[in-house]
Image 1 (spheres, rainbow, N blue to C red):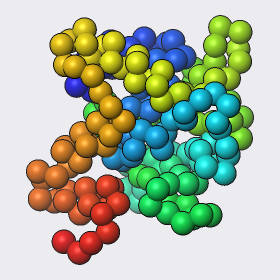
Image 2: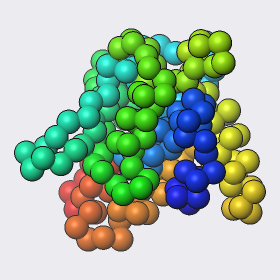
Image 3: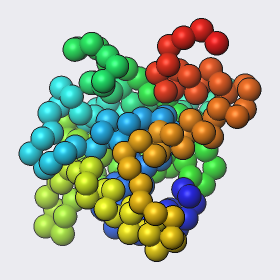
Image 4: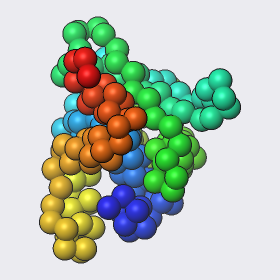
Length: 181
């Protein structure tokens, strides 16, 4: 699904670049689509939504790249709490590469929304959930896969990790199920 979606997007076109960064981030960290999108162009609030300054790509002690998104607000956190989402390099459907491409194609300041794109006039636009899902659904319908919904990528990420015994802990923590395994 992710490979087909990537092939169908134009990763030089700002809106599609943003869609790809949103999808890979939601999938690999099992985030709700509402955590990486907004309901409308007017809704952005830097205290609730991801900004450029909330994203970090670094190397671990073994020299491997990883990304960290510090989510300022989530359903599962108290007001003022930040929850960090981590992902690693994942082949040709990698969220780290998608975030690098996002910063190359859509340069933005530290307080600009992380998941945003520029229109033909250069104006920064937010990635609106309904518009993002509409674009994805056009691609999915062309492949006769039906339509997607906000939790699909989170469920997909969990489905990827859960069958592997070694990744069940990541799945439980990634999905924010804080219980002992």
